Length: 113
Length: 114
Image 1 (cartoon, helix red, strand yellow):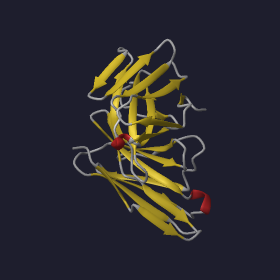
Image 2 (image 1 turned 60 degrees about the vertical axis):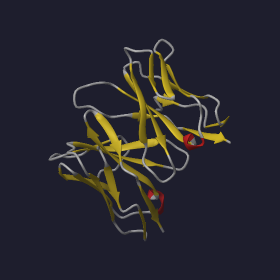
Image 3 (image 1 turned 45 degrees about the horizontal axis):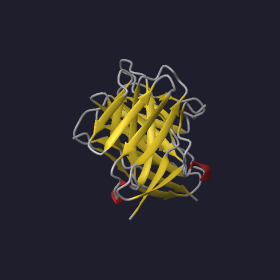
C-alpha cells in the first residue's frame, strides 16, 4: 500500500515552454502532497505543500507564478513549470501523506534545452 | 538555512561490516526523525524512524540512535550488504496536527564493497 506515481518519468522541453508533471496516490487518498526538487548531489528541497481543494503553500524563494500547483482531487496533484528555462532543469519529486507519513513518487527528470 | 546536516557525503564499507551514518540537527523543536534510502532516478523510500521520546529504534539490520542533548542521530546497518549501496537521507520534523513537512539532510552515499 501507499504507492505514489509520477508522470512523466522524464521530459525534455524547449526553453519558454510549459511542462506539467502529475503526482498520483494510487491506493490511498491524500489531502496533502508535497513537491520537492533535487539538484545533483544535493538534498531534497521542499518547494510547496499541496492541499486538496485549496491553494498551495509555497516555500520562501519559490515563485508561485512559475511553479503552478493544482490539487484538484484526493489522488492527484499537478506541478506545471511555466516558461521553463535551463535553470529549471532538475529532478522533481512529489510525496503524498498517508497515515501521518510521506510516501514518495519515483521522480521526474526535467531537462530544459 | 540547513537545519539537518549530514557532514559525510560518502561512506565506503566492506560487505558484512557495519555502516554508521551520522546526522546532526539544529532545530530543537524537531521531535521525529526518519531515514530514507534513495537509488538514482528514484524517489526516497522510508527506512526507519524514531521519536524523540526514545533513544533507540531497531528494525532488522537497521538501528537508529538518537542523542537529543547532542542533537545527533545515527543509523547503523549491520551487516552491510551490496544492495545497501544507495544514498541515505536523514530527515526531521515536528509532530504537529496536519503538519507533515520534512527537513532533509544533504545525503550520504553508501558504497558496500564485496
